[in-house]
Amino acid sequence: MLKLGRPLGWNEDFRGKFDMQDGFMEELNIPTYCNFQDFQFYDVIEGLIKVYLVNHEVRKKAAGLSTDDSFHTDSSMGEEDMEQDDD
Image 1: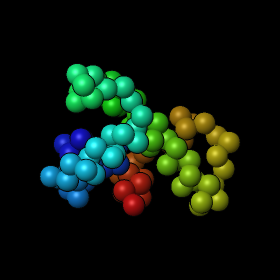
Image 2 (image 1 turned 135 degrees about the horizontal axis):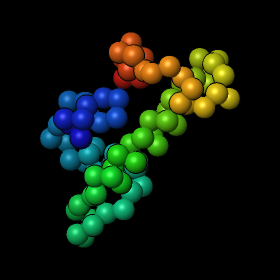
Image 3 (image 1 turned 120 degrees about the horizontal axis):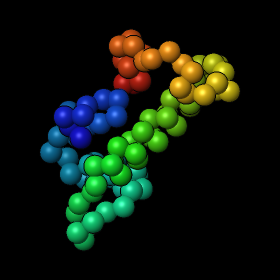
C-alpha cells in the first residue's frame, strides 16, 4: 500500500503505524484470509477503487459540479487532477 501511494494507497504517515493500517484495511470492508492476516490483491484494488470513486463524487458535489455524468465520460485524469485528490 505504501508503494502504491496516493491517491489510492497510503502516504508516508502510515509507515510503521499498524493501528492506522489495520483501521484503513478494515474500512475497505474486504474479505480476509488466513485468520484475518491476508488479503487478495484483487479484493484490495476493488475496495480502493470503490473508496476513490465515492470520494471523487463527494468532491465533485462539494465543488458544485454535476455528478450526473458517469465517471468514464470525464477526460482522463491528468497529473493536476491526481494532485487535487491527494487532499
